Amino acid sequence: MSLDETTPLVVISSSFSSPNETINSSTDNNRGWTKMVCPSDLHSAVILGILGISAIAMFSSFVVMAPGEVGVATTFGHAHGLSEGINVVAPMVTKVQTLSTKTQKLESVNKVPTREGLAVSLDLAIIYRLDPSKVVQLVTTVGPEYATILIEPESTSALRILTADAEAKALYTDSRQQIQIKLKQMLMNKLSVRGVVVEDVLLKDVKLPQLLADAIEMKAQAEQDAMKMKFVLEKEKQEAERKAIEAKGIAEFQSIVTSGISPELLQWKGIEATEKIAESPNSKIVIMGNSKGELPVLLNAAVDD
Image 1 (cartoon, rainbow, N blue to C red):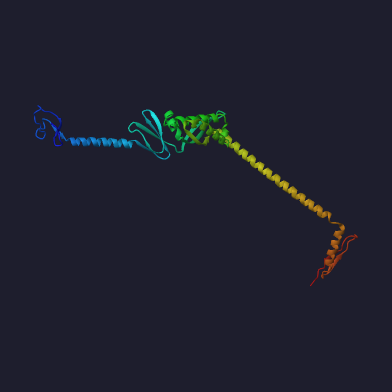
Image 2 (cartoon, rainbow, N blue to C red; image 1 turned 180 degrees about the vertical axis):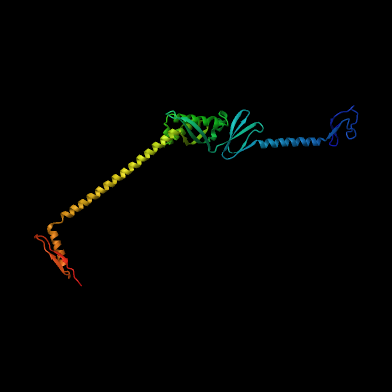
């Protein structure tokens, strides 16, 4: 006998006494229950289930990496990289880790020794980014916690090597720039092969022991005072040289003028002046000298009204 679409199918029966017994779930709840399912409904449900699973699998197979991001996809223990944009992966069995290739900053506070054996606190900032071509290598060999596992220990080690060979005052003066340059070069050499590109290294703050900081500050102040005094002395020296040059010029001028004045010239000038006074209409008193070369002195006489 064949089943058509109108033939009911008995799927489940909770209890019955014999194969020939008629089950009526609507009249006898104590004996059992039955569920009637049409073949067409079962077929539709199966198709819908397959379509749903297919849709989920299809959407799960696409992974989008935003700009400035890369991914590491791991499928059955094999890792490969995912670039920016849409990537296709095996759904359900692929694990994807997303990493940023944008510039990042890692800050840390480091207690390091100096040549004198002093403990100095340095605030260090490392500006870095990941090399997209080496992200898979970095994740598989180090892991996603590369900053803690790799960058921080390497930077601390390199910094201690440099400060141990430098005096404390070098960290407090312009020599700190040279330490930054050396530290950057060391980190670039160590981290570039692992997939980390170091863009810059900054020593932002240096905290010395208080006694040493005070001594350095006093020395710096004394150096500034010495430079100020040197400037003042140099200025006074220049002023003295200026005055000496000025006095020399005046003396030379007077020497030139004096050498051009003779007794005859003075007598002639005196005669000219006497003539001008004599030409005045006012009454005059004439005082004659005893010497031959002396000129008469003319004084205006007082005139009473």
